[in-house]
Image 1 (cartoon, helix red, strand yellow):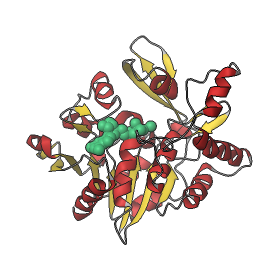
Image 2 (image 1 turned 135 degrees about the vertical axis):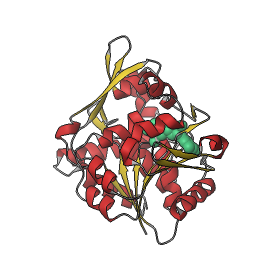
Image 3 (image 1 turned 60 degrees about the horizontal axis):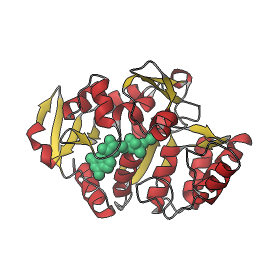
Image 4 (image 1 turned 120 degrees about the vertical axis):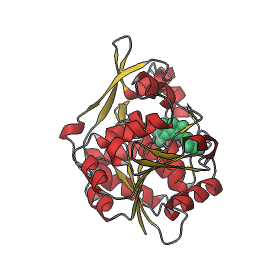
Amino acid sequence: LNVVELSGGVGGARLARGLDQIPGLDLTIVVNVGDDDDIHSLRVSADLDTVIYTLAGVEGAEGWGRRDDTFTTNTEMGALGADNTFRLGDLDLAMNILRTDALARGISLAEFTSQAAAALGVRARVLPASNDRIATIVVTSEGERLAFQEYFVIRRHRDTVERLEYQGATEAAPSPGAIEAIGEADLVVIGPSNPPLSIWPILAIPGYRDALEAHPKVVAVSPLIGGRALKGPADRVMDSLGLGADNEGVIKAYGEIIDVMVVDESDEADAGTVAGVEVIPASTRIPDAASSLRLARFLVGL
Ligand code: GDP
Ligand code: CA
């Protein structure tokens, strides 16, 4: 069975961990790169690393970064006068240094990602949405334009998001093999990721939207439970962008591309057919490997 998942960071990675445990399932994960940034001249790909670390079983307690990481280098950079508010762990630095080096030597992001994932024992194919640079820009209600990590990490996503831009997306190309993987997939899953911040930057790259619309079985898992994000600003962002912070808003966010949406069993009042999308309840809280595998089996059963 060929499955493609579109993913941001923590929510998408949690579902990937379940899909990855199903024997005989051939998994490709297409990961958002709109969060990528240069920190101290190091290329940081937050969502790719979250997916790799989660599948390798070495992710941090909050779902991102490396488990039991230390911050000795980061602290020392502060002592040397650098702005170290975007914290990079000592273990995490290894990935970021090697990615920066690979890119400088002309190796593509997709090639580096595939090598690094394999080195950490990851079986699934982890693909950046693009080898080209895409930058999500947050325009706030105060009219400020913020780089994604400034909005998310430095300002802790407190600002009201008025508008989003995906710089570079329309000139970017999907990673080699990504569109073909969607075409050959028996099932495409959109993980319980933040729709505007994690999935829209992928859909903004020419090729993905058409491939998904053409696919007969695209299933999204809602990141909202009872109208609330389990973590992060998805509910607030969906509200300020006019989608509404509920499962109907998630359906609006994806429009024509999805055929089915799985919502949490506690939201079973939302089940039925909404705007041509079949809405099905299931247990979508997936904090650990066992719950994630259960949801993955349910999705494959659809
Ligand atoms: P980020 O890049 O790290 O923000 O990760 P994503 O965009 O992939 O995921 C963020 C979303 O994951 C948030 O909106 C959360 O509500 C959602 N999420 C996290 N854990 C779970 C879970 O166990 N179940 C569901 N349904 N959603 C989750
Ligand atoms: Ca992210």
